[in-house]
Image (cartoon, rainbow, N blue to C red; front, side, top):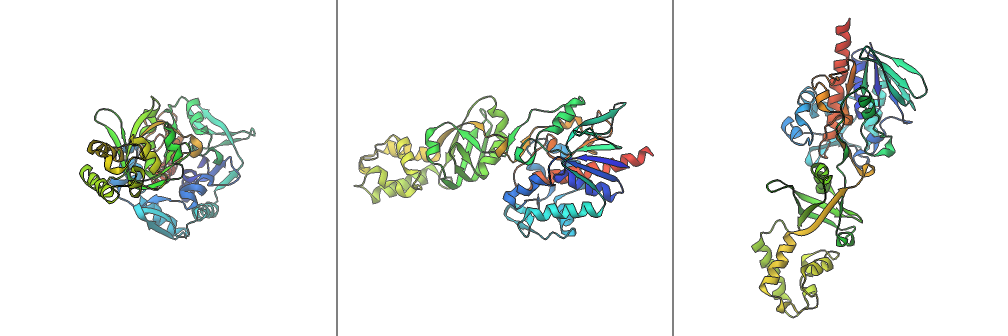
Amino acid sequence: MKIGIIGAGAAGMMAAVRAAELGADVSVFEQNEKTGKKLFITGKGRCNFTNDCDQDTFLASVVSNPKFLYSAYSEWNSQQTIDFFESLGVKTKVERGNRAFPASNHSSDIIRALDRRMESLGVHVRLRAKVAGLITEDGSVRGVRLQSGEKYLCDSVLIATGGLSYPSTGATGDGFRFAEELGISVTDTRPALVPLVTEEPYITELQGLSLKNVTLTVPLGKKKKYSEFGEMLFTHFGISGPIVLKASSYLAKTLEKGPLPAVIDLKPALSAEQLDARIRREFDEAQNREFRNAVAPIFPAKLRPVMVRLSGIDGDRPVHTVTREERQAFGRLIKNFPLTITETRDYKEAVITQGGVSVREIDPHTMQSRKIPGLYFAGEVIDTDALTGGFNLQIAWATARRAAESMCAADEQMY
């Protein structure tokens, strides 16, 4: 049986390994000069390759179409991924948030392990081999056509081309084009797990300021809202950091309709009453000082002038002249620091692509196209994405294994 795989990223390499283990003659076509180019930069080069969690936690961390992944994850879970890389000689470790990494903190260990395994199994890896399109016959896929004009005929083809995020790694969206050329639906795509752009000038004044233990809240209608506690960062264009990247996956689609108001609770551990008591305490200890100096201990240095300006209270006023109403309004400002989110940053800064080949077009048990026999999909090219923490790579591993096993099983049934 001959199998062609387009893309030597996480999904493509995993599928190649599994198909070759099952006896298939596998050829992988990669347009870059090396394998695993995006994998190399994941987790800031450390490669958070999965999340050591149970199935419920995994599915709850999938933003788009989690039910589609139920079968694939059931067949290949996070622990199996860890065991797999350990079996290939990669020592692993699990850190905060159940994030699994190579013990060396080098993503190259994961890539080398997959490269070595493919080589030992006789997988043909074709580098600098850009696929121009698919070859079909009688409504079924029969191979791939390279940009060079060369044709490769096979029994089935797996599209594992990734999405559009990090175009510097070769992400071009070719997989979406291949699907659409065959009449397969592709949902709207957008950057996800990406920093957010804000409107207010004072946000950019805070560039470089990192805040820990704050809560970002974005109303999404009368009853629905996004709210997350954790760490964030102010940038020259808006906001970034863990809770912001997570927010982007939930807000990106809504942002296409227009800007969203948001608030940051700078002191979420304190109730309004507790915060007011804290402010009164600072005022009592600095009764004859200016307002700007009295509130200084409450905030990081970079945030102080912005907070004073937004309060509407003259910073030079003696603190004992600040009224009860003004003080309480200042407390509300601290609990509701305002900003307006206008858009996401682009694919150059996005960890993942949201959207892709519609899950309605793919059999979740096999990863095969429902329309085109012999055509399979795995990884980021599919319209399913998750939060940070190793979940997206787990999607790649699980869907790739499922596709590889299905391709081999389908080929056996043919004969």
